[in-house]
Amino acid sequence: MSLPQPFLTEPECATMTVMTTSPIRVMVVDDHTLFRRGLTALLSRDARVLVVGDAADAGEAQRRAREFQPDVILLDNHLPGVRGVDALVALQDAVPGARIVLLTVSEDEADLMAALRNGAAGYLLKTIESDALISAIERAVQGDSVIAPEMTNKLVAAYLGATPNDTAPVVRPSILSTLSSRELEILRGIARGSSNKEIGRELGIAETTVKVHVQNVLRKLQVTTRVHAAVLATEIGHS
Image (cartoon, rainbow, N blue to C red; front, side, top):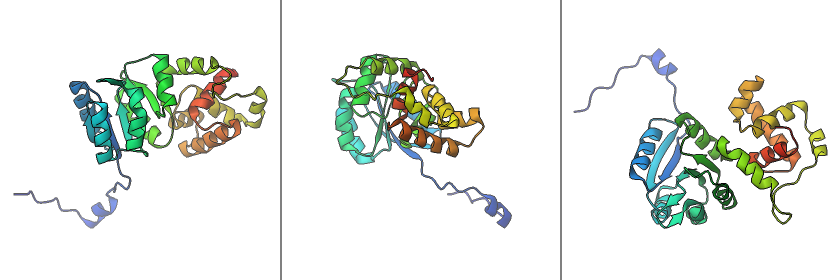
């Protein structure tokens, strides 16, 4: 027998908050059952995300990704018979619209670069705090590249050590003259790996204002991602 619903007076009904945005659909891919279930339980506590499925290997991940159509796939790098970085392309083919973020213990620079080359939206370490993980998922859906702070220096070193045939962006200090003083502050925040919310809090401006500045910075630097902007800022000494 179902319990009667609590009666709401008209004023109470008027003040109720209605959730108008759908939660982010997440799929977890990890061969360690305890970690997979623990992460699923952890994410399920937050109303901003909805875990729609999980998988223990690359083949199962492809099948379930087609079935569940997640917005974000959290992908371990050490799967049975294949590395996560090598499973990226097939997963992207299975769900072209999904943002795939590596969630791994590997701090290997080669794995990081392989993940980004193969289209990963981010590279996070399993030591990440739960609040930071939720924030990273939200940023990934918004189109940001989310990189673990511990990996930023390795990413910068890899780009700066690129050969002339590589596709790392090149910038001249004169480009900075096109940035306003506020945009330079935004660029420094990007280089530190700060989110728009963190930059806004530091500078005392709205997160939406930061987002507009970030778009202007990327356009003026002629790059398409925050990662590239961070690399350029570090290269020319403005981090």
